[in-house]
Image (cartoon, rainbow, N blue to C red; front, side):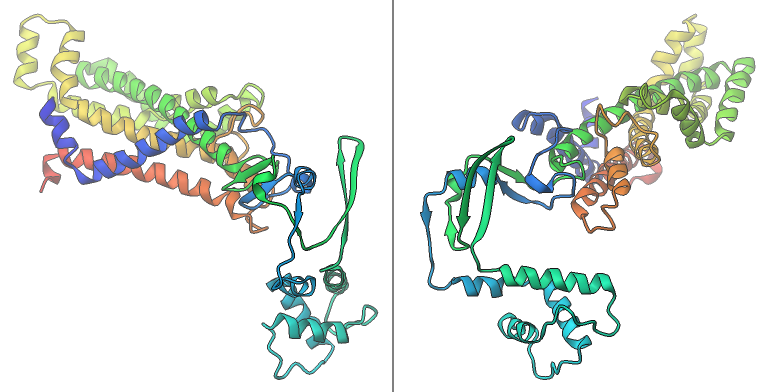
Length: 417
């Protein structure tokens, strides 16, 4: 046994896969202890609630204003300079588009020079003008842009409220600053928030744990059923073999994913928890394990040590458990690893179709993908809502398949160097 374990951990592929998978598993266990709380609870960040908030550090506007202590006026940052610096690339493109449509000579103008571009804009922009080729929505966007540029660098009246009661009204100059360490409420969002205003990182870690649990439960169920049927069918043979293979062939002919869709749909959203989905996946994905175990047992049942055990009068259970199962244990472990990977991918596919676990109770990797797709995160450029999920699913599948490949190289003589 020790020699077998030593051989397994001498396989580079298995070690790499094991380290990746174990690291992801540790993250799902440790992170909730360091950052406790409901992963499906919304993070209230002012007007950003209800939209995909990009990654960053956010602080309470109320607390920042309440903790205001000093005014800083750096010589290199006047209000006029700030107005120039505040022009974004998108605004610059819109300005150049409008000026070009108005046939204003832009030859020799460096459009990357914000100061020069702003001077040309202020000298030529006319709100009532209707440039050729520009739609009404584009003209309205230019109006909003001009309003933003006109208000830059000026004092902005800021009304801070708490609940329904007005607390403070203060004119804040754009050159007024407050030290970050004096702001009480600071929220760090390394992966931003989703459309519901929930911390994507906390939600992702919780989803990893749930998906791994679904994969583990489904893998145990599928492997156990496949192992029992495969052992009985391969060793007993005869009528038992015919019955088991008849049932197996029926489930093989009907695609398991179609069965998953029909069963999950019939269960209903409210009753479809994470464990229910895991059990359904396990009950529909045991067929290939049964056929594989059966073929292995057929090759073992007439071996000398098995025949000797039969002549000794040992029971069926003892022969199977002591003379056959140890010889296919490594194969069963590899099948179990593949079942976990397959179950995680199956849950993701079901959730993308809206047939995953109940959305109000838990988060899974598939559900996060479903939410991102449902609220068009991919169209709005909110990559943080779906790209980390895709990466984690790919990483988990990659690590499990790498572990399986490493085990196969250790236990399969034909693949050894």
